[in-house]
Length: 271
Image 1: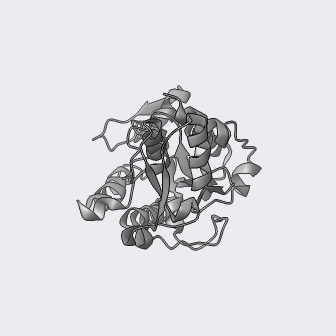
Image 2: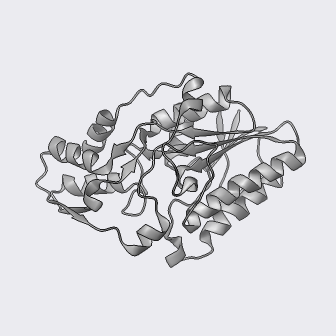
């Protein structure tokens, strides 16, 4: 059985629905029920600095440490879900071995969480895996907004023929994959990935945000006007303009993406 922390979020709930050998931990429970752990507890964007400056630290670091306090035995395998955000401005496609330069509070605390986990595991001879996820898309993300999973948010606006703006004429690049493919990749790494390593989880393909929006507009036959504006100063400070991941290590485990970007867009466009 897999002890799942954060099993009610978008990725966590999808994973638990796909695999029966999962046990979701209650929100306030810190002690794991099994020695095989999948940890997804996290904030979701860089914007908490404006409203609750300690939230990223409390959620991404303090809660992790409280869980780790119950993991001081060498039989545990701690599978930690991280994010492409930890790379910051990086050479592309970003490889697991590249130096990270995270920029916002969310990004910085996610990288710090990785480092804390590695230090803890080395100290207590606990095994770990770290998985850095790409942009995860698919129907059912209840927290999609202009701040998180903005592509889904913009497509929803186009369903109602609302006018939208994209940053920098839609030129920013992302690595996009369907949530079910992401969960299949996570499971593959948990089952076959080397211990004490970092794995990128993604398609390994660069996709322009503007191209996704254009395909969605055509599919919807939307009357929305698509404008362009410069990314605001905060976005430039804390976000990364372009990102896609080197997925050689994941592919070497035998991973094959099953849901195309076209299918993702069509799903998001369907009510």
